[in-house]
Length: 150
Image (cartoon, rainbow, N blue to C red; front, side):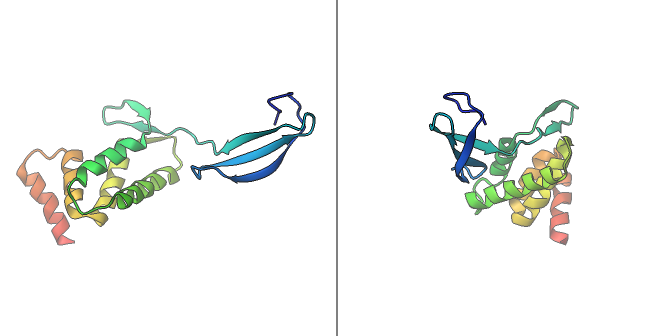
């Protein structure tokens, strides 16, 4: 690591700790040449995930889209923000554990529905009705029957 003050290559780490976001490491460094201290942050480099939409367009993965869909499905339901955040974390972990560079939005939708089904039935049906684009009441009833049979 080069010193930002004198550009010397001789620097050493004198303290390491997790940064405030817990997703990176904060390192205090000391330059052996000019004796000045500076801070660096080390973060894991992730490969950007591309989502393949239903119309075959591709866009970068965006966690906030999953959060927004789940929040709409859970509106006025007895589900805490912590439960929603935990759910989104589980979904995201499952998505990234597939270790693929591209993932169809349909796969993400199915993962969300599986997780919502275990969390809360009404939220699941709300999400499924939008995601599966229910055309009439019969499709809606078929989905409800699947839940009741389990």
